Amino acid sequence: MTQRWVVTGARVFDGERVLAADSVVVEDDLIVAVGTSLPGAAGDQLIKAEGATLLPGLIDAHAHVGSRGALRRALRFGVTTVCDMFMDWRLAAELRAAETSGEASDVAALFSAGTLVTAPGGHGTRQLVGAIPTLGTAGEAERFVAERIAEGSEWIKVVYDGLKILGEHLPTLDFPTLSAVVKAAHRQSRKVVVHIGGLDGARDAVTAGADVLGHWVADAEPDADLVDEMARRGVVVIPTLSMLGSLLGQPRAELAEDPILHPYLSERDRAELVGRLGPPDNPIGSMQVARAGVGRLAGAGIPILAGTDAPFPGMAHGVSLHGELQALVEAGITPNRALAAATVLPARHLGLADRGRIAEGQRADLMLVRGDPTLDIAATRDILRLWKAGRPVERPIEAENLFRPPVVPSSGRLAEREGTVVTATCGVGWMPFTDQQVGARSTAELRAVDDPSAPEGWAIEISGYLDQSGTSAWAGLAFHPGDRLLAPADLSAWSGLGCWLRQDGEHPAAAMLVPASRSRANPSTVWLQPGRVWIAQQVVWGDFDGSDGHDVRAIAVLLVGPPGGAFRFHLASPQLIRSPAG
Ligand SMILES: [Zn+2]
Image 1: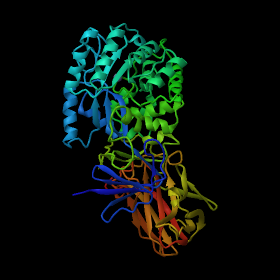
Image 2: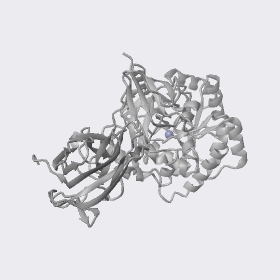
Image 3: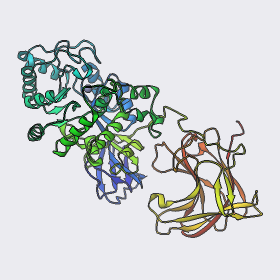
Image 4: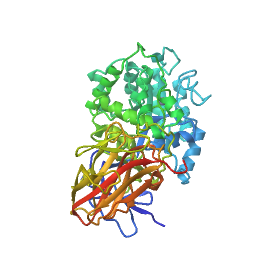
């Protein structure tokens, strides 16, 4: 049976820019329509995405896949396609076959270079795969490349570097052999990706006719002649700034501590992220030089692709692509072009015609993130929903208890008053919380009022206006337990929230939990039962889509319209409760 679903109300980034459209319709594994306020047909699943951005699933243009697990880890962070740049070709064939047969919905799709081309004893012969065939002379290039293609290599990866940056002097191909490999690959309709370690190597690779440089360099900035030559020849660059940072002793270890990423990071991910390839005082180059070079290339219009080189020390599958996007922006590339570097550009330049863009007929590899990554590139980390070929991807939580619990009085009490001002016993405290969060116009204000009928003789009065123009409206107040606004806190030591409610009107009332990590775009709600007299209310974390309260940004109590119009309600004695079972 055909599965159809519609994302509506989203900002839609198609791989190059934000479209005027706000809706995308998916049928089975394909995007079938992109437009504005597309209603969907009867029976379509509707996904409301106000305040969120829909973008193509990410593509890592340079990684090394050692197991199926690598692709599973990549997918968890929104990387729906991995372009491998050297792995065991037999494993690649196995993983490709699983993808084709539809058995791979929990792992990223794979395209692979298979065995790389390197000199006897050169880079690649000692790492990642084990014993591999090597290329001795230019005369053997044609046959050597044909063998790789027979094994299934999507493109030809060549090493032209003796790893001087790591203080080594490994054998490497000479220039005539490099040129012969490029010619052989082109004769056999394959692109050539060249691993280079310094600016001289980059120059030689361009002269030899390389299509893609598999890294950029940190030893020198490119001169105008080289940049012009690259632009003229249409050379594409995968800078792997994350890898250069690791070589220079500056891995992006901060990824391991990012509270948005943290729940999805395994111990192994975190260990890999804080590793590094070279010493902090590596004299062989500088990140400043590397960034300036990448900025120049991008400024000349040379296509830049985002690649991580995971899982070398300092990089982990999936998560490091978010670090690489940040690194590209730090090199002066706009967020839009950084996003293109991980979507439309790798698809275009590595021959993945069916993906990398949001357009009719494209494969439905899609990622919905909170916020706007075209303004703040780090928003790509805040994944709300993810689909591979139209199928939803579950993102299992790997790590609990990253967020600190607030210091709550033993009573669990959350509110106090100073005159008419409502104060909190912990966290950022109590604030109005309305549908202005999603672009509507309801209002709310809070004050503390005497109320002899309330359990403690006072209450929080919430009054305001429910915007009648929207299809649904909500307004009320929220408790923010973190030490900054919307910073998550760990409330899992408590089982839920208790309070007393009464209201003058007859609006439906609901509690809303806003967690940091979730698979749904819309925060989940639980209905409450307020009356004209005080009624005690209780909600437990598990009522909210099975949350355990470990990552709560806010807990809100709201009145919900329609009908719209003015409202007033009172809330008293809010407190965190512990389950009777303990
Ligand atoms: Zn690599």
